[in-house]
Length: 402
Image (tube, rainbow, N blue to C red):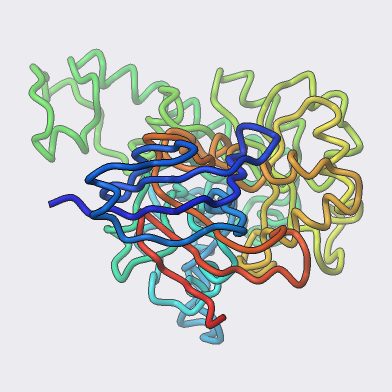
């Protein structure tokens, strides 16, 4: 039997239209069923109702880049699972194998209105493994997944250099060379698979999920790293790049790969060039001290500069660097530093959803999408914002005591 929830007469900021409007929203089984000025009928009479008159209704906020669930709150080493320091090339790692959905940070995220995140490995490695997209509510990560493998994390610059300078990664040239080497090996591996009649992978054959006429004798030896990179070179998932923006773009073009640029703290220095490239950019974390050279030019004016240059901009926390619940406050600081409010809203909703490839489900209030909402009185971008409800998949997952 279907479950219905009605948000009655809220002021809707849908992240599509710049002007807010008052309407009813009917939710059925976790999806937005209908949006209309006034909804009536038998189904409406069966629905649980939230009287949203005088309340602002926003899409659930989306963080396009973080490490939520991979670094335990007040835990220490036992909860630090976002960086693997045994090998600079680890594409076979998957974020979902380390996420702890019962960590305190998930509750904090919901209290801040963050309903969906792209979370995954850190930047210690040249290739770190796959990011996943999850909702911020649930006891088991398997039940929270929007997309299990959403992007392949790669990192340039200081982080892999510092982590592996005693293990053969001493310069930026070495970092780029290692990435190119793995990409070339994956292309060769893919060709050998196809020559054997395999259009998928060893993993799919072993799962028995595809019926293929494969000549096993011609199959290349199984390689977990290259298997993990197949979706990248086949264009199924993008690279998710940390630092050295122009090198990341150069390699992506060289191999005809999808690319998402994360952090982009120096983006204002090449705003015109980034606007011409049309790769989505995520900016942050922008609070705090510049702890290394690559953060020297960070600031909350960067999102506005990049947006004005024609870039599709997301704002990120890189949590735990900034706590996840402060994502809307980061957008507020961007507004204070020149970003249009509507652009800032989109930077933590629909544009963030596009950045991670989840715009068909989250990021805006539209019929057919997941019923993820933030309800409050006023703007979410101020320091005194007080969220009344956070709703994920049509379920109230946070309600203030007011």
